[in-house]
Image 1 (tube, rainbow, N blue to C red):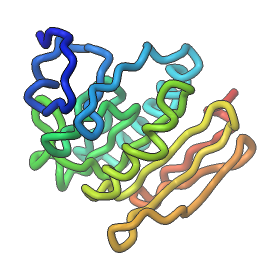
Image 2 (cartoon, rainbow, N blue to C red):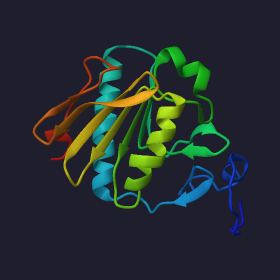
Image 3 (cartoon, rainbow, N blue to C red):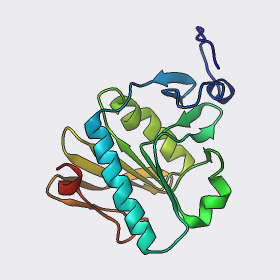
Image 4 (cartoon, helix red, strand yellow):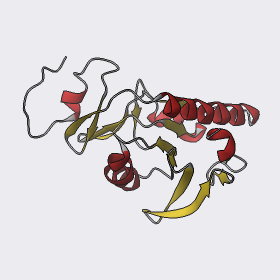
Length: 184
């Protein structure tokens, strides 16, 4: 276990010394602590995960989808715990170990007051840099979602949908998120 000490930069080695399920992420060499998610956050996360698992079961593929907490390690400076992570069957054996080592194909982050800055700025930059193909940001307060697609190593906003609309995945054709059901 890592004993709390004042340190300017933390590394993946420091991060891996933390207790399992410790409420930290390593974001650009800083250990960032977050409180447990709200009940609304967890309900939305559960609905998204259920929808994705049902969709993937119907296409009978060996894809990988999980909800947080799971570590996604990008480099020695960044280890995140995204809300939902999807890895295609083609890349599953390559990056899914005890943790995910490398960029998932899709990441979904559900905003909350304690994490919005990191999800919208710092983590988004790392996802972009390391090649997460599709990044979806769900905003429970605004009751909206934004889908960013990696295009020539840069995220481009592909779709923004509100509570009465549907957000459609690009990397998983046929996967649609009915926001009315997510935010009910």
